[in-house]
Image (cartoon, rainbow, N blue to C red):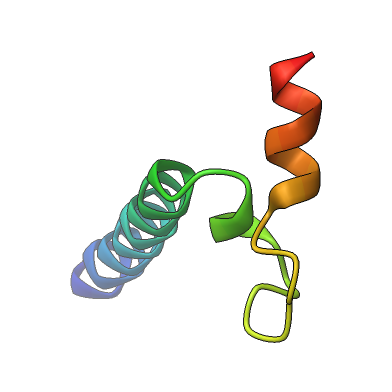
Length: 53
């Protein structure tokens, strides 16, 4: 019984954590979700240029 509760809490905790990370990254915009954002020199100018069209 206790094992089932602990497993359930772990699953829901991980799902909540993953959802929190997704929402936090989505608020940063396109560059916030990019895997190259630490080494990117363009500062998302390509994305901003495409949005203006």
